[in-house]
Amino acid sequence: MNIRHNEALRERLAAEYVLGSLRGGARRRLESWMHEDAALRRSVAEWQDRLAPMTEFATPVRPRPQVWEAIEDRLRLPHPIKPWQFWRRDRTALWRNLSLASGTLATVLAILLLIGQPEPARIDHIATLSDEKAQTVMLLTGDSRRHTMEVRVVSQLTVASDKTLQLWAVPRQGAPRSLGILPDNRSARLELNERATGSDVALLAISLEPKGGSPDPNGPTGPILYKGQWLRLL
Image 1 (cartoon, helix red, strand yellow):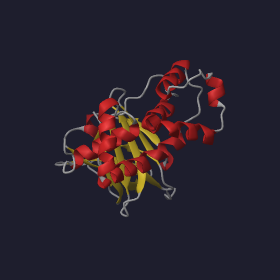
Image 2 (cartoon, rainbow, N blue to C red):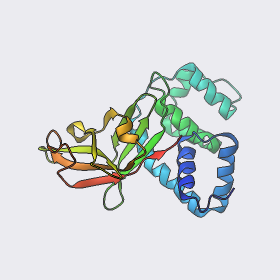
Image 3 (cartoon, one colour):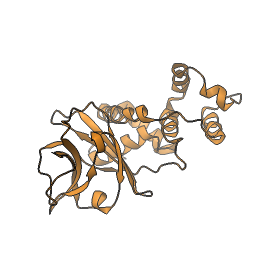
Image 4 (cartoon, rainbow, N blue to C red):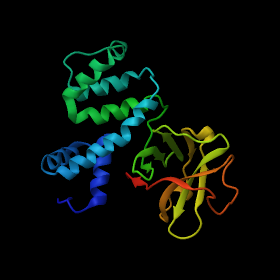
């Protein structure tokens, strides 16, 4: 299979590889392609840079025993490791040991990011919103099953106290649709629905609005600061 000229497929595979949702033979094939494809390696590296900030928001929670059993099986550890012993190890040593099994690193990272939730999140939408210098400022992840969208600020923002950041879905035709505001201009959880992920959505954008949001129901009144597009993983 030749993915050299299929940009959308390349981006999707690179994102799934970093998230850890690309498994088995598909993961091994992508790794073999990366050996011969410098552009594909760059795509994977770019997704690692985009998603790495998510680790800053992971709250330490004692994992369930089943999580550690799965990790032990994947790493083929010769001796069982008690969860509390593994959890209390030095973090640097933890990641150094996990690097010995590079093929499972993304999977382990995804598990650690999600173990604090009652059920595993099923992230099927991802978007990075960038400024005019192409610097990623926000990371959006959507779970269609739960109808939730996490908006995470990954770069320092300076917003006047009388202003608000507002998220919009911009369709190919018609007026932009408000998806909500970021309280205190920080990371937030918003509703994920057809307004946000419909097939007509061409762009996601963040505008700078008066406190409380745009006074115009038909769209933003302030400048567009950041924009990006959904990447659908499923």
